[in-house]
Image (tube, rainbow, N blue to C red; front, side, top):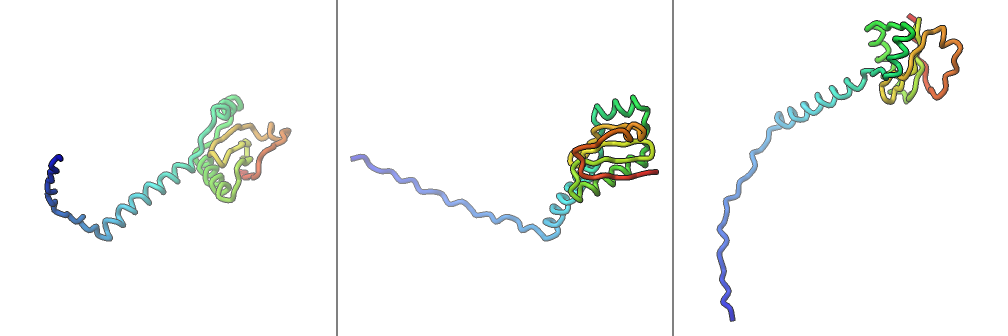
Length: 129
């Protein structure tokens, strides 16, 4: 019969992890919170689809930065209320905006908008300034 050979296992020292302080835990959670809020803020910026850019250029529609900021704010409010697709009416323009995707889908001047039938929208934002 074969002889069995036993090799003793060498004991290893047990190391305890360094305790983390409450401040370190809070700081790491705080960094996550900051990053999370930044991600949400960038989400509120509107993008303009290629189609909408072409329509804005073709129709000579110019929307200043102040108006864009106001549109973004109102679209975010609408999104928070459950609106997915909205009609945004400005003094000189009408925009169809996907609140769900934060994207301007198309644009037209107000005169052209008078003759249109808007479908598949569930919210309207009036910014007659």
